[in-house]
Length: 215
Image (cartoon, rainbow, N blue to C red; front, side, top):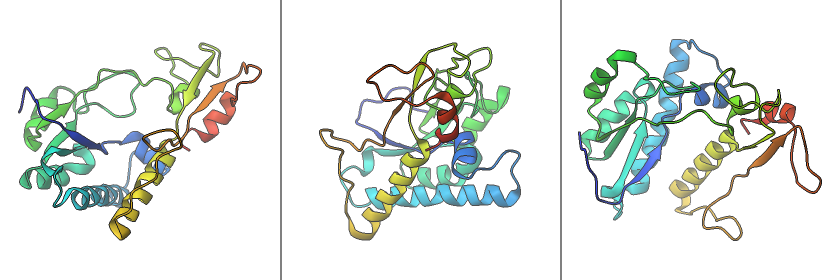
C-alpha cells in the first residue's frame, strides 16, 4: 500500500452501507440474498458511470473510487485491474463512533482487496444524519430531548438522486449540471432543525427532521 501521495486525486465515494440500505432502499438488516444482489448491482451502475466519465480524459490517472468490500469487492478488483486508484472503507457502517467493519480481521480484509488506500475516518456520527435528530444515546447530541439546541440537516437521498440524474444526463447528452446561483457547486440544501425556533430564522422542528432526514 502507498504511504504517501503527492499527486492530485479526485475520489468518487460510494461506500455507503447502513444509510444506503435504510435511506435509499428502505430495508433493514439482515438482508436477503436478493436484496444484496440488488445493492451490488446498483453500485455497479455507479462504477460504470465513473468509468464512462473518466474514459479518454486527462483526469483518468487522477480519478479513483472509494467503495466498501461488502457490496463492492468485485468493483475493487476490476478497478485495480484497470489501474484506477482504489480506496476501501474500513469502518463499521451506521455506528456512532468508529469501529472496524471486520473487527480484529480488518487487516486481512484490506490485504484481500489490496486497495491503493484504506479509508479510516476518525469521526463521530454527528448531526446532519438521522441519528442527530432522533437519538445518539449516550455518546451523541440529540435535538429531540434538548441535549443540544439545534443542528443542520442535509438530504442524502436528494444528493444521490441528483447525482444519478446528472450522471445519466452526462452519459446521454454529455451535459453537466448547472451550479447553484452564486456558487461553484450544486447546493442540494440544508435545513436548520430546532425545537427552539428564533424569530426571522427559517427552521423546522425535530419531529419534521426525523420524518424528512433522508430527503
